[in-house]
Length: 76
Image (cartoon, rainbow, N blue to C red; front, side):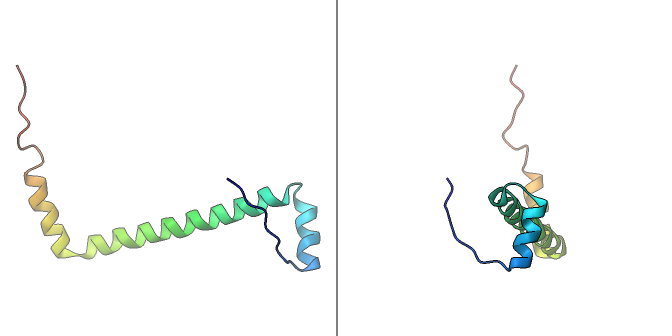
C-alpha cells in the first residue's frame, strides 16, 4: 500500500534530485528503505554482541543444548 505525501525540500536539493533520478518517489522510498535496513542490522548486531557478552544467557543456552535431541528416537 502506498500513500501520497507532500514534503518540502530546498530548491538546491530539488534540482539535484531531478538531475539524478527520473522517479522522485521511488528514489526517496529506496533511501528510506536503505536507512530502515541499516538501522535494523545495527540493532541486530548490538543484540548479538550483548548476547555474546551475557554469561548467564550463555550458561542457559548450554543447558538447552543438552536436551536438543531428547525424545527423538529413530523409527524402525
